Length: 57
Image (cartoon, rainbow, N blue to C red; front, side, top):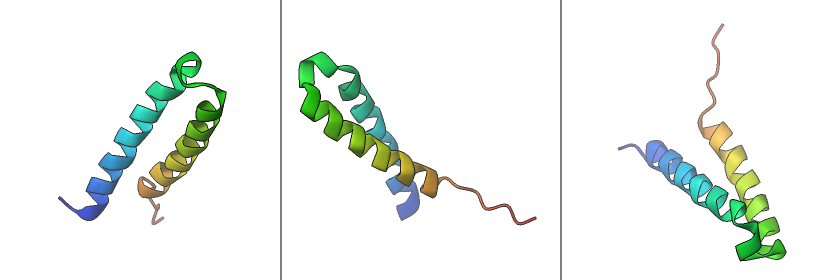
């Protein structure tokens, strides 16, 4: 597999795991929830950069 494909998979798995932890707010606490939210936002931006399609027309 190409390096970019592996990176896309890692980012997607990271986003999935973070989402599960973010939904467990009462178990992880407010501070961890906020930090995970920031991490999720960063992964969201990376995800969109890796999956953008440049239109040639």
